[in-house]
Length: 257
Image (cartoon, rainbow, N blue to C red; front, side, top):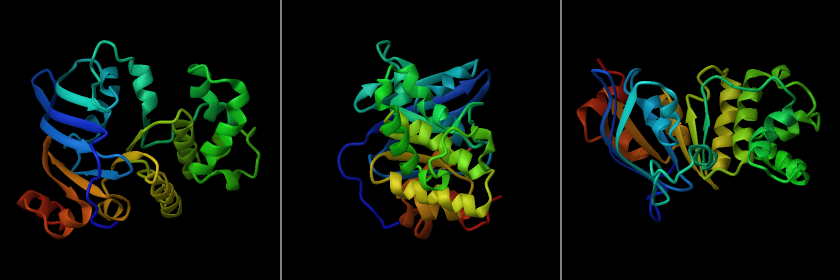
């Protein structure tokens, strides 16, 4: 990716975010912006708070009992914790794809329309949306129109792209991806990365990855987390070639720890 400069206001603004459980601090004073039509990679060692961070962006963190959240997160200028914000609707606008493909025990077609049925979309629109979503996820040609097959018959990489298509069907503005290729083979990983490259022209993407090489390949900006704190964030090329923090340099050069 080129050294891009954010254009326009951020689509998500995180300010002084703190997340904790009992006596443990998971995230500490994180401030970060996410920009539209850009890929933001979140990197760092295990236990640095990467997954917790992206789960706060659409209030998925609330599904984990005992966590307390402080600070501000604004989506398109609105506080996502405002009592008037419906978290279900928020998660349609800010979708999520998990590390392991979470396909439902139903057909490919019914997986894609699952969210459409929940939000009351006109069924006459289903075929068009399914086709468009599968095409955007880079899966339509591979399926050759056979959408009545059980989703579990797909390969792991295809299942992951089906999950992406399902998230895209409800028209998110932001897509959160938590280690989306962590359990995939290199060929499937490449296809998911190609999908990310296509989607970044339309929406904002935040991707958690343990792979520095993947962050370099797919992202416009990279944020390095360590022990719950945001150490550094910069355009990816700048962060990898000229990091300003010693902790960042040690991690990306393999001298960490």
